[in-house]
Amino acid sequence: MHYRTLGKTGYEISAVGFGAWAIGGDWGSVTDDEAMAALSAAVDRGVTFYDTADVYGNGRSEQLIARLRRERPEFRMIVASKAGRRLNPHTADGYTPESLEAFVDRSRVFLEMETLDLVQLHCPPTDVYYRPELFAALDELVARGKVRHYGVSVERVEEALKAIEYPGVATVQIVFNMLRQRPAELFLEQALARNVGVIARVPLASGLLTGKMSADSEFGADDHRQYNRRGEAFDVGETFSGLPFDVGLEAMEDLRPLVPEGSTPAQLALAWILSHDAISTVIPGGKNPDQVADNATAVDLIPLPDETMEKVAEVYNAHARPHVHHRW
Ligand SMILES: NC(=O)c1ccc[n+]([C@@H]2O[C@H](COP(=O)([O-])OP(=O)(O)OC[C@H]3O[C@@H](n4cnc5c(N)ncnc54)[C@H](OP(=O)(O)O)[C@@H]3O)[C@@H](O)[C@H]2O)c1
Image 1: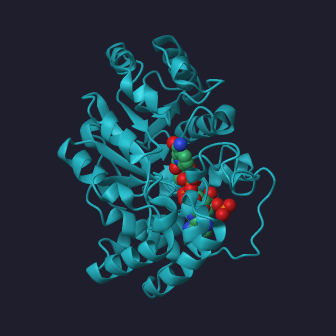
Image 2: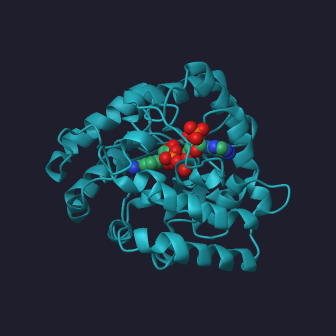
Image 3: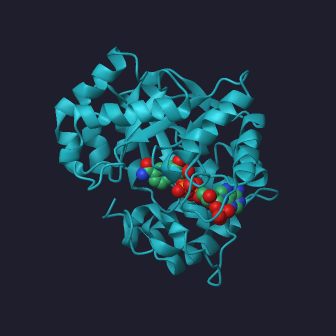
């Protein structure tokens, strides 16, 4: 494993982290035993950064991570959770100092942590970024010891650029992968200049970039790759990175020849992201030990050769750009 600094937090974290959404819910059935096996495999591979949220399985994901911390007490890991999506309706006005503190308190109970390592606003409505009083409220939670650091998880590049104007924002989580390249145009250099940690989410485009899917792939009714293809439940950019499934499959076929011999498409996808210096960590979701091992080994490919980076840019321009570049 390689380790990088997570921006202003100063945490040294693994370049490949663990995305704990799928072990919470929304991705078909994952039993507790399967989830714990995936998490244990991550620990064994030196993965020290775990990304979760209060809403993943309504707290189940946080509770599984708490169990991991209990079962592996010798292992020092950093846990990032998120707050805001429990609001119903999910509106900017719902974000108040009181609601944020209540969400943080719930995560402290579920994660069994007196002080949260990192809490991220969970893709709030854009207007939230224009309410400095909410960022002051987060500063206050830090001062009172409930949270050590805070950051934001954003949908759009413009939200990220606005968020990093607040000095307390230590990290930004954003969709960044071979099929979603716009963050590399301006945001990454700005984040680096301000020492803001960047957490790259949806790195495998919901599994599309593992090369295992085809037009015949089927997903259960409880899997967002079935029920959110048109953004019916949440931002469509979170499902297959916002690409129509058939377009994503075509792009994957053009990327396949770029996979180095002896490596996997997933490793290429993760190494492409980590070849950008501003990225602190990638957080692929993992449902079993094999996936976790495959993903962790991606660090062996960093940095990818310039020629590969150029060819990936060509594939992006040909397939993905017309669908995603103007949207996120
Ligand atoms: N709004 C937000 O803040 C937000 C939104 C989305 C995600 N996230 C965070 O980002 C993390 C990662 O994003 P994601 O989970 O949406 O998408 P992802 O990492 O692009 O895809 C994860 C899925 O791909 C499959 N997979 C993973 N590794 C594999 C491998 N080596 N070989 C084959 N298949 C593999 C697994 O599903 P199958 O085996 O079922 O195919 C897994 O659940 C999440 O877990 C979450 O922590 C945050």
